[in-house]
Image 1 (cartoon, rainbow, N blue to C red):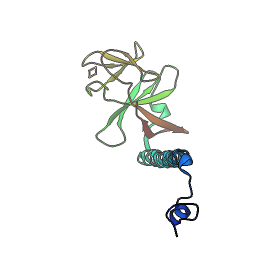
Image 2 (image 1 turned 180 degrees about the vertical axis):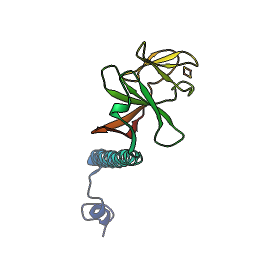
Image 3 (image 1 turned 30 degrees about the vertical axis):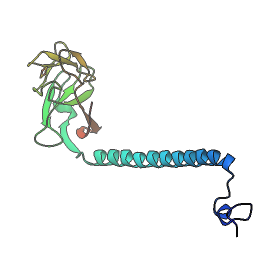
Image 4 (image 1 turned 180 degrees about the horizontal axis):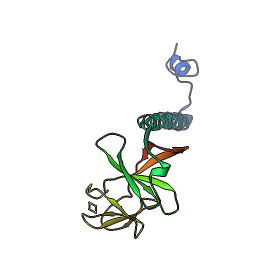
Length: 165
Ligand code: FES
């Protein structure tokens, strides 16, 4: 068996002509990139979905008030999702209920609802938040107040989760 020519042994293992090997290498590399990218997308998607499920599952469902105990413009303080997390339930003038974590997103001072101006205010550095959305209206808070997700069943109001800002 010769080492040169058409019938040599290495040609059986590497049947690619010299002129075509760049093309094959590029194609193999592209195939590798596509497979690696696909695997990365699938892997990341798995962890994102799993993280969302764990986050959703980790919040307790807690009865926090009844609809008739809070008149429009009034509030009720509660703790959620555990005893260390103060929260505020507000009944807006429209009659709708909203709830937020009661810690300011600036330096964690407790916020309060000011019915006269329909805002949530932080006394520490005069940060203000929109009562209906939790959005920052003025002052140093960098983010909206985290919203506590609530669900009303009949006359009972339940806290069911936290939508981090
Ligand atoms: S802690 Fe609320 S504005 Fe600074």
